[in-house]
Image 1 (cartoon, helix red, strand yellow):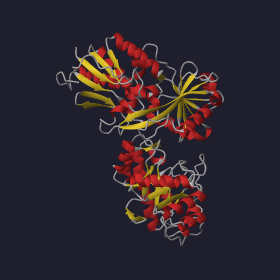
Image 2 (image 1 turned 45 degrees about the horizontal axis):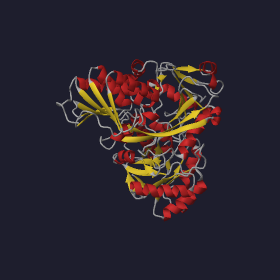
Image 3 (image 1 turned 120 degrees about the vertical axis):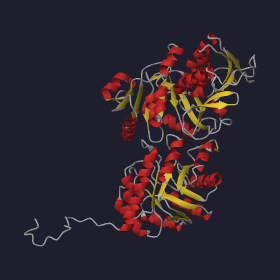
Image 4 (image 1 turned 90 degrees about the vertical axis):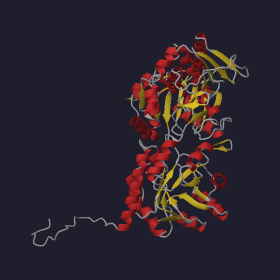
Amino acid sequence: MSLFLVKGAGVAGLAVAYELLRRGEDVDIVDYQDTVGHGASFFAGGMLAPYCEREGAEEAVLTLGLEAADWWDEAVPGSVIRNGTLVVAQLRDLADLTRFASRTTGHVWLGRLELAELEPSLAGRFDKALFFENEAHLDPRRALTELAKAIRNLGGRFHFGAEPPTRTKYAAVLDCTGPAAIPHIPGLRGVRGEMLYLESCEVTLKRPVRMLHPRHPIYVVPRDDNRFMVGATMIETDDDGPISARSLMELLNAAYALHPAFGEARVVETGVGIRPAFADNFPRIVETNDGLAIAGMYRHGFLLAPAMAKKAATRLSNGAVLREEMIA
Amino acid sequence: MLKLYDTELSSRLLLGTARYPSPAVLSEAVKRSGTGIVTVSLRRETSGGKTGGAFFELVRELGVRILPNTAGCHSASEAVLTAKMAREVFGTKWIKLEVIGHHDSLQPDVFELVQAARILTDEGFEVFPYTTDDLIVGEKLLAAGCRVLMPWCAPIGSAAGPRNPSALTAMRAAFPDVPLIVDAGLGRPSHAATVMELGYDAVLLNTAVAMAGDPPAMAEAFAKATDAGRLAYLAGMLEARDMAVPSTPVIGKAVFS
C-alpha cells in the first residue's frame, strides 16, 4: 500500500481518491476550501449526457462518458436519476434541432403528444423534441458530499482550509485543483461559466431539458425542493467575478421562453465557475514534478471524472510514473 | 491579389473565430482554409473588464492577421469604445465595424454605423463596415473614409445564401473600385462561389464553418469554392439564354422543332 496526496476536493480529486482507495491505496486529500466540492464542481449541471455532448465534442467524450452513470451509481448509490435528456428548440430555431439530431446518436424524435406524456409541464409548448433516453443526471453538490463519506469509509482523510496533512511523505501527488492549476500547467486556459438557480412550484421537470438557440442555448436541470439549475454561459476568460447583467438577462430570458412560469420563479442563487480547458477542450492526465495532474475537465467534470480517475489511479497503482517516496 | 487598405492577401476567404467546438478545431480550420485574416469578437469574450486572455493568445498563435470586430454593439459610442479596446488588445488599426440595430434580427443599424465609421476613420482606424446592400449607405460609408465595404447577403447566421443577387450585382456595379466582401448569411460553399462569380472580392464566414460537422473540411470546401468563383469571374462566364444553342451547325435539318 502506498500513500498518495490528492490536491483538490472537487469532482476530479474525489473521483481519483475513491479509485485509489478501491485499489487498496492510502489517500490524503487537501483543499483550501473548508468542505468538498466548492470550486468549479459547485456550479456544475451534473448532467451525465454523453450523447448530447458529442454534438460539440470528440468521440472520446461519448465513449468515456458512457460509463459515468454506472460509476456514480456504484460509488454513490441512489444518486443517479436515469430519466434521459430532452432537447427542444423554439419554432424559429427548428433548424438547430435538426442539426443537433444529425450530429448525435442515441435519441428518438418525439411529437407533441409524446412530449406531453413524458414531461407534462412542456405540453403544448413544442411541436418536436429529441429524447435521449439513456442519459442521466445527478445533483452535483449532494453527490460529492456523499462521495466524500464513501471516501472516509474507505479510510481516506480530508484536510481542509489551512490545516496541513498529518504526514508529508507521499508516493505521488495528484493535482486535481481545476482552474487553480491554470497558471502551472502549460496550455490550460479558463472558460467562464455563469449559472443560476430558480425556485418554482409551478413547473415540474423529471429530466434535464436543453433548449437550443443560435446565441443563447441553455439547459435546465431539475433538483429537489422545486429548484432548477439554469446554465450556462461560455465566455473565453478566466474572470470569476459575479454574473454580468447581460448573462443574467439572457439566461432568464431563455428560461422564460422554455416555460413562462419561470417568469414568476424566485432567483435563489447565481454563480460563476471557471472551466479549466486545453485547446481541444478534452481532459488530460499530465505528468508533474511530483506525480500526476488530472487537468482540463472543461464542461465534462461529472461526465469524464470517473474515466480519468480510473486511468490515473491505474497508472499510479502500477507505479508507472513513480519515483520512490517523493517529498510532497 | 486582394488588397485591403495597404495589405495584400492571397486568400479571398476571411474566417470568424466564434462557436468552434474547441480552439484546436478552430486552428485546424484556419490552416485548411488558407485564410490570411481571422475576425475576433472582443465583447463576447469579455467579462468584468477582463478580456479573453488565453483564447486571444491562441488566436494570435494562428499566425494570420487579426481583424477584431465590434459584434454585440448597439450604438456608435459603444462600437467606438470597443474598437479602441481592440486596438489596445491586438495592436492593430483594423476594425470590423458592426453596429446591430435589433438584438433579434441582428440587422445592422446603418445610421449608427455611418456615424461610428466617421469617428473611427478620423481617429486613424481602418474600418471594415458590416452593412446592408443599400447603395446610399455604401456611398456614405465611403464618404466617411471607409475603403472597404462588407455587405450582407442574408441575415447573420441564417445560412440562407444570397437572397438578393441583383442588389449585390448593383452594388458591384456602383462601386467598381472598392473591395467588396460579402460578410454574412453564407451557408454553403456554392453560396460563396455564387457571390464570387458576381465579382465580389472576398467572403467572410463563421457559423457555416464553425457549426459544420467537420469544420476544418468545411473551411477547405469554402476556400475552394471561393477560388473557383473568383476564377470563373475572371474567366468570363456565359450569359444564360432562353433556349438551347446547338454547338454544331444545324443546316440541312428540315425543321427546328
